[in-house]
Length: 220
Ligand code: DC
Image 1 (cartoon, rainbow, N blue to C red):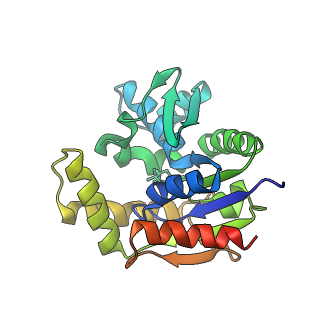
Image 2: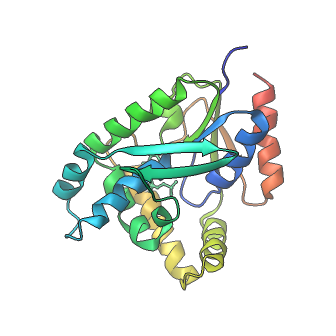
């Protein structure tokens, strides 16, 4: 049977990784969380403990070794052999990741890795530029979004569960800033591909969204 290639794009906090991980499992695809790869580069940049400049990020990306593993439905991320799965979700990493992801040499390295992983079999990949740039020939293209209020609420809950003390207002501001940075950057900005289906999850539960993705995949 032909490999299934599913591309899911959307803004921060739309719930992509949660639903994508579950849908990939049900579809028997490998899940590739491309945001985690940019976060891994951001994490390594912070390890230098220097002011974060484009020059520093470009120096870090020259020899960074990012690996994603998807085992038993769970993604783990490693940088130069160190497991950083938990550490790439901290507010410090989130604060600089849009700057990291806007740089051409960072993107070309990550996209090359992403395409190599996708060539191995059926995949479900999520990010910002999957349908438009990384995998333009994907069988299924979904643009997953939700209102900014709902996205901020979801992130708030997630951060609270992890024990971070953040305010809802601050989170909403951060998400709006990240939306702006990701949508307005020059290289591969966040945009709905003309042939992608819009899925607004503002009033949908996780299972409902997963089912909607599976329904779209069953039509190919
Ligand atoms: O989905 P996320 O929050 O983990 O993504 C982290 C950042 O990486 C986000 O600010 C945008 C960027 N990103 C990107 O530019 N391209 C992708 N394919 C995935 C993420």
